[in-house]
Amino acid sequence: MPVAMAAGGGGGGGRVLDCRSFWKAGAYEAPAAPSHEFQDALETGDFDRARVHPKFLHTNATSHKWAFGAIAELLDNAVDEINNGATFIKVDKSINLKDNSPMLVFQDDGGGMDPEAVRRCMSLGFSTKKSKTTIGQYGNGFKTSTMRLGADAIVFTRAIRGSLFSCSDVTLSIGLLSYTFLRRTMKDDIVVPMLDFKIQDGDIVPLVYGSQGDWDSSLKIILDWSPFSSKEELLQQFQDVGSHGTKVVVYNLWLNDDGLLELDFEDDDEDILLRDQGSASGGVTKGQKEIVQQHISHRLRFSLRAYTSILYLKKFDNFRIILRGKPVEQICIIDELKFKKVVTYKPQVSHDSQVVSVKVDVGFAKEAPILGIFGMNVYHKNRLIMPFWKVLQEGSSRGRSVVGVLEANFIEPAHDKQDFERTPLFIRLETKLRQIIVDFWKEKCHLIGYQPTDPHLRSQYKATLKDSGGPAQVHHKASTARRTAGLSSNLLPETYDDIAAVGLANNGSHLQSSGQAEENNMESEGLDEDLVEFGSGVLDPNFVEKLSEENIALFTRREELRQQDTQLKRKIGDLEHELEETKRKCGQLAAELKVRKNQQNLPYM
Image (tube, rainbow, N blue to C red; front, side):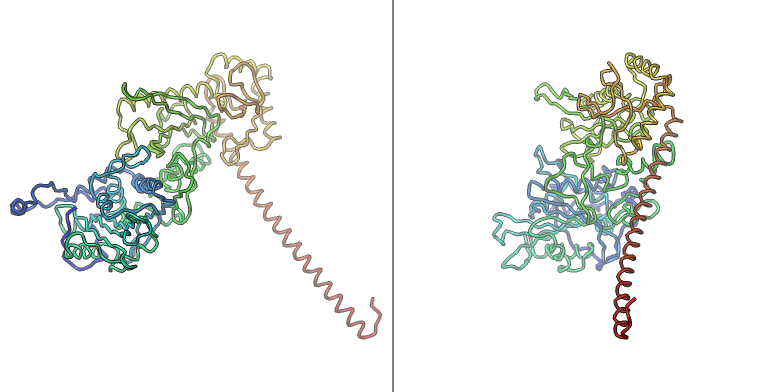
């Protein structure tokens, strides 16, 4: 990138864009360069390169329609550093001391970047990541992600070049990518000021590649347009980086149309939330909506902690994502499913490539059948691209509560890593996943209380109901089983305990009691017969609503009783303590009384 000239004006901490809404910040008229500048460039030999207008920084960042997608890009950079020894990535809030505005900080203990690498990072479209394991590949993620989150970003990175034991090989670099600076100074080219230092005889000294004047000019721009007012404050940012690592500080964060920060740091001290993204969806009753709001498929849309918990398919052995001081607990969606089944898919990639085999894990959400949470979770190189992708129509009863997981490394994600390009290969994958869900539903839907779709299973089911005395008798048996065994709560994830009374065999040949093991990696769970409504082929909505309310009421009552029990135990403990204290005082008084009577030569009564 070209070396910047010092900007005019004093160091202002309150320098911000006129428009702080991301989706409007690019709507401005860019001044045209005077014709004499082109003539000067031609004469000085600087006409052999194309310029990149600052407006492109904003245009480029619009590839991220979702702020969490931008954050995920920065997390990916840290995850890629695991190969260089990274053990954590911290995401936290900080304060810009110049204007007391919040800043978003990302810090990892990876290998860091030497001066050459940090310049590549700040350049547009440059990437050396060609490994089959690294997530980054386009050389654009850092620029798009930081500019999507805020108008400005400053990078601090420390690296060791060559021997680990040679202090002269330690470099410290600082780079400023400031949309505010470029806009406010009316630049017609992207200027990224950079500072480099090295450790020499135990001291931090400037590392000058061009002229000292260029180095001083870059320092002035960074001090004028960053949250830091002196060179000493800049160097203090390396104190917690350690011997190697990178810190990215994003400031002048974008606001929404109401003038509030897009990112909410206040409602949860251990999370970062997205405003205006938490509206409830799905669920018939108030109780169901409350459960839906707590489900990961809903929370990931507005909770960064929820989103990052499923962002990576494989759990890390020696790496942690630390969000606002608390590690994120990784969740494996596959472990959350019941009646799981594995389907192998071999996509037709190309004639000259080797055969690709993809494992698709599919099963019912543990909240089935009351909550219709469904969708396929598609990963690419361990990274979640499409969470709970609804390959079937939202209102379809087929596929209700069916959730799947697969890693599709044979197709390339879009640049924002939130979708795939609709290539013929992707369309074939969508068709295959739709068929997998439909087949699984036809085979297993009776296990969560729906009428069997297979005519043979349906006739046997009706015969069983007839032998059992009709639906009313079966309803009575199932209800009795619930009363004796406890709360039948496969409707609620917190209390799911596999106590259904009667189950339909997987092969449809006979009825079996719950607890008998099933094949195809199926969990041994039964079917509550009273959930089935014949004639319609689906659950009766009124019955579902009533049963859901019943379960929620019982669950709430159980929690109240648990709290009462805890309070009573605490009260009993306090009373026992008081009793012991009273006995001790009585013993002391009796001893004192005996001593006094002995002193008066009176017989002790």
